[in-house]
Length: 74
Image (cartoon, rainbow, N blue to C red; front, side):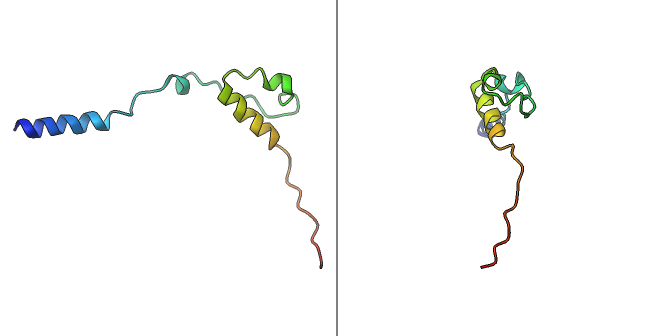
């Protein structure tokens, strides 16, 4: 009986091990809107956490519109 209870407690604790909330996820601010004004280097530098700044600058670099090339007739 003790063995079954011990196994049940161990399984319960291991299943709940990753359920705590992280501080960075709960206090995250949304990224600013990607536009010409916000993508200036001095405005990108104002984004607070480093990982958010990297993500925002990456979005700024990839904000151009897709323009298909002309069809080539070789």
